[in-house]
Length: 633
Figure 1 (cartoon, rainbow, N blue to C red):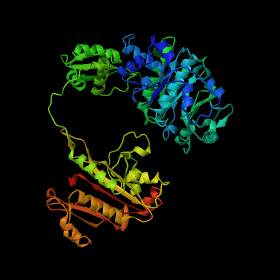
Figure 2: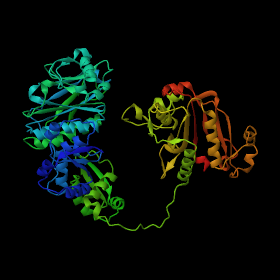
Figure 3: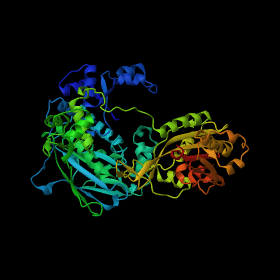
């Protein structure tokens, strides 16, 4: 959850109320946010073990009380003091939700500011959206909040500027129309905000990589560093406004004297760009001479295949509906429909009305509430407006006895036993890159559940194997001792495409599959160790080895006394899995009452192929096993 730091006195001044810390904590809870910490600059410095400040430097730090407020990750309108104050006042019924208006600066629409996007930007950041705020009055506090909101958006919705980058400029220092282009780094020369001297873009990237004073910009350098051309925005005189997503030019720097603000957002995701722009203008248009007004900008594309062009900001009002019975059922209340309509005003979802003879609630979603996507979101906000403390505790109307699912019970028992065998349990990420999930394991790329807009290349697909996570764990623990072997295991789900799997009468196109996976890495391959784990798992699951399998074992007499379920047998046979070393791997085959006498492959184990180890930078030989648990129930 993002944490927003606001000065307590400034917050109370804007709210028009003074609260004790306990009272404000309770207000935050009622509103659905959390007062995480009460601190000050001096307290923060004293708690920071890495801050080596002198006594004089500590005394110079402010003792002004700061509230750190945790806000929901999708409530972008609460990332600055303006948004928090506005939302709380509306929640307390002390302020009506504002109406945001798009207003032309001139009656002549041809005089409207314009941004032209050239085709050269397509490979790197193809989209741009813009707006203008007129007659803004900045104070030191408002200016600091303006900058902080951009930083918060960059960290959260913009995904560290990879999806969207925000640029703000003093409109009176530049001349439209504006051009968004991509040029070779050596051809882009300007004075950046961070320096007083001119750089070309190539040299500036090296400066940000190596200058300790610019370490806050270093994480963004890889976004465009290897590109043949860098994105750049210029005005009609060729003046560089910004080098997205890195830095703005000093020429159009915003100061406390700035009155007219030009806002541009470049992006790889147009939807998120519009959300970011709407958030910035709705938060800070309240400081305009005509509050909550914004001037539009035309965005034109020379390449029609990207877009036909549009005017921004959009500031769309949307309608969402939720059934009255659904809302009451989800919250656990019995609220009249008319009361719900009134509560919508407290959470900025008004005006609301009733449809279908009063059985359906229709709300109006303002541009600040991009988090409202479904009837569940509407119900959640009505619950907040009603007050969670006002929900009466009731005894459930159903009479059932809870119990652990058999698959979970089996997993918990196996965790204990595998841990006793010396393996360390890990919990790895459920998302993976296509390369690590398939290619790095020497597997062909097969269908998988893909993410439409992954945060980065690491999160492209939902994993179809647990092995990737264990190998990455080994990769990141190379400093550990492998002298006696390094044993890891995980029991978790993978997700496999399945066009026949049904949940609640709907074909979802995928299904979860519970698996156990273990890896041994050390001075030797450890094949016999992993093989022993396979036999131990089967023994614990009361599955008998087949006669031919027993004949190859030195424990023939012992198998007579094994506790086993009737009709369950397993064996192994040589595998052709390319993840493993040829001739040193096997498939695990299970015969059980539901298999019709056929041998079903439930997993494989063996010595990992050297190319797999190289792909994950593992310097020791390793063996692994991965098998499905559901057939063993």
